[in-house]
Amino acid sequence: MIVSKNLCFTYTKPEETSESISFEKYSAALTDININIKQGEFIAILGRNGSGKSTLARQLNALLTPTEGTLWVKGLDTADSDNTWRVRQSLGMVFQNPDNQLIASIVEDDVAFGPENLGIPTEEIRRRVDDTLRTVGMREYALDAPQFLSGGQKQRIAIAGVLAMKPDCIVLDEPTAMLDPSGRREVLETVKALNRGSGITIILITHYMEEAATASRVLVMDGGKLVMDGTPKEIFRRADEMKALGLDVPPVTALANRLIEMGVPVSDSILTVEDFLNDGFIQTLMAGA
Image 1 (cartoon, one colour):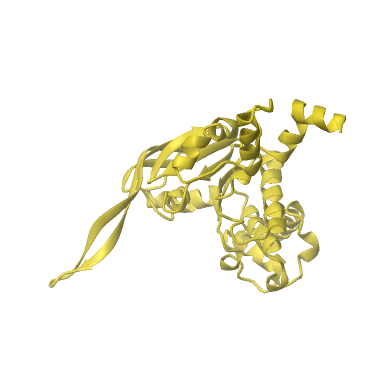
Image 2: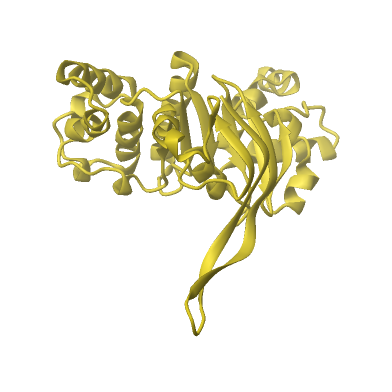
């Protein structure tokens, strides 16, 4: 689905001189990024602020293109402007603030906006709008005004708008950062259902370790470089390294690690509350209680 080879990106800033405005390179945002993401994977990308996560997300959708190296989406070189439209058809983006993506006064009109711009026939647009709203659990709100919805509901409408264009991959750049726990849960459940039920590749950029724990693979970035790549269990076992990068592990994992330090024989692979409750030792304790 996505392959990068020695991907580098450096932002530029204008610098005025007595004769003209020139552009001076500064602050390498991405350095030698090599990734291979297969169709149907659920990838979480972690990293503290300034690590390059959002810059990488914009590379994937050709909003930015490499200053060095190459990035391919479904075999299309993102640096080739002739490929930009097809890249964006294959890979949709959902941003942090859903209000920045909702442009219509009625929910179903907002979801229809993308397919209309693709020139999709009216009958097919109607079907896509109904199907995608049903998929994200928002069909009953089709005729509502987006401004009266909760944050989680708005984000699900933003996902429906991307989904209506039938992408192979959806990149979500911190989509739950502005939501309360209930809204976060709604959005994450929607994303997981799209991945498991429809086989859509999901790339989730997040600050929440418990969200990353639900992915099939975790990438960790620091200083514009990819420094870790593995399953959630492989990554979160390296708690000391994560802390050195200014990150953490899921709260329940931290609890399990603390219990292990105290000599309690729980598993060292606990990532979720369900893992904790299903642990043999914990179940024995609960049965005894």
